[in-house]
Each structure stands twice: as structure tokens, then as C-alpha cells.
Length: 165
Image (cartoon, rainbow, N blue to C red):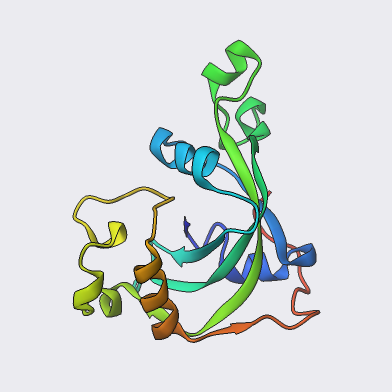
């Protein structure tokens, strides 16, 4: 799951109550379909910081609530407002809830992933891939985990409110 850390970072997720927050604002049909059709409670996902000098996987989160309507699509004050959803009264977009589970001891940079011959087929590394939600195979997952050496979060690590609403 890609995020721009200036909007909502892995640290913001960790700092949220119970280190848990909804993942809203996805406005691409293919990314929405991944969340709606593929994400199951208990699935683990990488949290990847994009739109930064050095894009990288920062941590791991768990899907704790499966896809449900993204209510921000119906809120005219939200940056994620969708007039087409408002016209029908139902959000055509979904969100999921995720909880931070572990932080990478060594964030895994895009450059590091590109250096791994076994990751060359990874969706994230393919030219033109811009989706905020992308699939990762088990082998790719294992390689990124081995590179990042994740550490479980300790209780009480979340202390401040997240910036995203």
C-alpha cells in the first residue's frame, strides 16, 4: 500500500489509537478492486512511502477490517469527494482498516529492491506502475522481509493523533 508520508506516514499509523486507521481516498478502479476483492482480514501488507526522495517500504500492517464504503466520497468537504457517488447516494469507492504490526529495522528502498534479480518481476518495479495498491507474491514478500528485518511494534508506541482523517 503506497502512501505519501506528508499526507499519512507509517509513523502516523503507528501513532493512531491502537496503531489502527482506515485506508481511504483510493480513487483508481484497479486499486479499489484489489482492496474490495482480494484483501481479507488478517492479510499483511507493506506500507510503502512514495513521492519522497528515496521511496521505501517502512513497515508492515494487517488488514483488520475488510472493504466497506468510503464515506469520504459522499462528503463535499473532503478532498476525496466524488460527485458521481453523491449523485447515486452510494460510494462507489471502498476503504479498509489496517493496523501497524512491525517496523522495518532497515527500510527497504526502491533502489535496493531494483538491485535484487529475484524481484525484477515485482509489480512495483515494472515501468509505469502507479497504483497505490499492488499485489506482492509470497516469494517477493519473503525477499522484502529478509531485506527489511521487521521488528514487532511494542505496546504503547502510538502517542499522537494521525494527520489524515
